[in-house]
Amino acid sequence: MEFNTRLLHGRAVRKYADGATLPQISQVSAFQYDSAREQDEVFHHKAAGFAYSRVANPTVAAFEQRINEMEGGNAAIACSSGMSAVTLSLLNMLCAGDEIIAGGGLYGGTIDLLEDLTKFDIVTRYVAHMTPEEIEPCINERTRVIYGEVISNPSLEIMDVRAVADFAHAHGLVLIVDSTTATPYLVHPISLGADVVVHSTTKYINGSGNSIGGVIIDSARFPWDFDRYRALDGYRSFGKLAYTVRLRTDIWENMGGCMAPMSAFLNVIGLETLGLRMKQICRNAEELASALAEIPDIIVNHPSLPDSPGHDLAGKQFKGKGGGILTIRVGSRERAYAVIDHLRYAVRATSLGDTRTLVIHPASTLYIRSTEQQKQIAGVFEDTIRISVGIEDAVDLIEDFTDAIQSTK
Image (cartoon, rainbow, N blue to C red; front, side):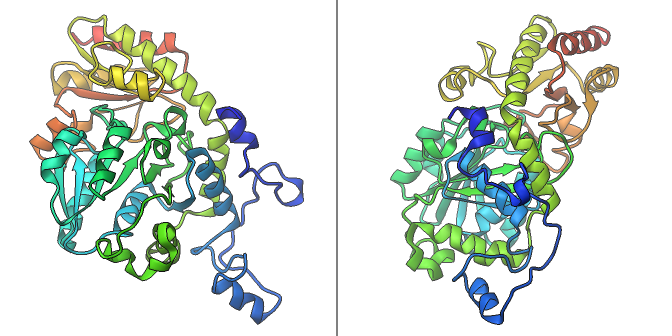
C-alpha cells in the first residue's frame, strides 16, 4: 500500500468495537476482570488485557499500533508530551556517568532538558553539525548514544540518517532521532538505520493543535551490550527487545508519562490525514520560500531553495520535499516584530505543524535560556522569524508575507 492508503487500511487498523471505524475512547482509569486468576495473568503479562490506564489503555494502544506501522518499528510507546518522549527515550538506556553526543541545533526545550540531566551526571557533548566527521572526536569510553533531529528546528539542518547510523553502529553506539519536523511522510528513519525514533505528536501527527503528546518507536534491531548499557542489564534475557520491555514495564510506567486516551483518539484522527496535510504544507512552504527569496533585503532558508545547505540531501533523503518550516531574517529584532505584527493570516503562536500557518520570534521565546553560541548554532538570530506553514492557499500566504515585509522597510 502507498502512504495514504496505509494510514487508513494498514495492518494496525482494527475492526473496532461495535463496528466503529475509529477506536472508541476508553476514558477510564481501571478495568475489571471476571476472576482473580485472570487479573493475575494480565498483571504478570501472561495474558492480553488492560490493568490500569497509566500502564496500558485500549485507545492509546490503537494509536501506538498505527504510528508504529507507519514508522516501520517493532513497538511504539505513547507519552504525555514530546518532551516526555525525549526524556524517557534517553533515561531508558542511560545511567549516571554516561554521555550523549547531540546536535547543537536542537530544539531549545531539548537543550534545556540535556542541561537538567547534567545534575544526574549524564553529560552531553554538542557538535555544530550532525556529521560523522564532527561526532568522532567527541566519542569516549562513556559515550552511549548519538541524538539528533532529522530536520533541526529552526536551523533546518538535515541529518544524513544513513551516514550517521552507520557511523554510530561502527562504534557500538545507539542512534536516537527526533523526526517531529520530518514526519513519516518525508522519511522513515528506521529504514535508514536509526535505532529509536521520537516524535512530538502535538505537531504534525495531530495536526490541529488540540492535544499534547509524544511517542517513542523502537526498531528492536540494536545488539545491546548489557555490560556497556547498564540501565538495561536486568533485561538481558530479552535480547534486542530489552529497550522496549524496560521502557514499557519500568521507566515509562513508573514515571507516569502516559498519553491520555482522548489525546490518543485525537492523534488517530490526525494521523489519518497526515499525508494530505503534509503534501499541501510542503508545497506551500516551497512556493512561499521561492517567492520570498525574490525580495532583496531578507534571507530565506528552506531546503527546497537551491542555495540551502540541505538542498541536495533533501532531494535524496526526502524525495525532493523540504518540509513545512522556513525561516526568514529581516535585519533586526524590531523589524522582525513589525513583520510578525503586520501579518493577517499567520497566527502568532508557539507550536508548529498546525493546519494554520504559525509564526514566532525564536530568540525572544523558545531560546530565552540558551547562550549566544547555542542560538547561533541553532540558526536563531535577533532578526530570525520561524514560519510553520499551514494548509491555506499559497497565493494568500505569499501576498500576506510579501506585504508585511515590504511595509516594514
